[in-house]
Image (cartoon, rainbow, N blue to C red; front, side, top):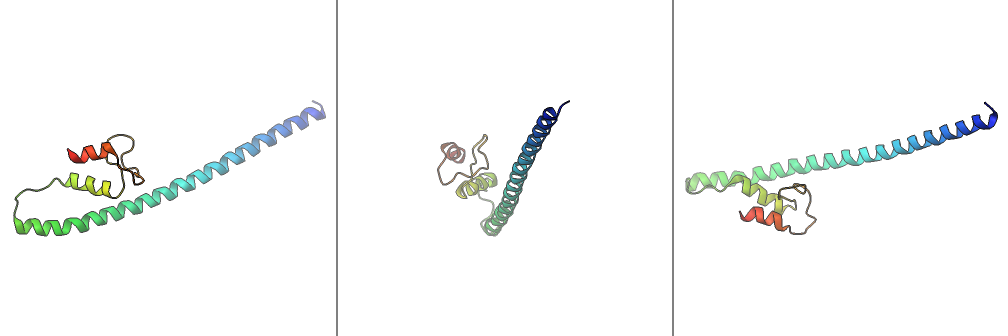
Length: 113
């Protein structure tokens, strides 16, 4: 093996190491983004649970006073609240994702049923 072959192999190895390093940096950034998004979603989920609990407490008192006339579906109320907060409630891959302010016909159909 002559010197030029050795230098070519070293250059090729260095190129591979640099590519692996770049891939590692990109993967690290993606992991940080996903963790930040996960934490934000967990906080938002807890806030929604707290909001649901606050809204249901007066309803329970009111229902006890009025008696058991007609109890609305709790699941439909939750879906309506989630839709109002800006989330998709329609079936499919959009469920739970932000609507970004736009109305969704599929979500509205779920609410009208």
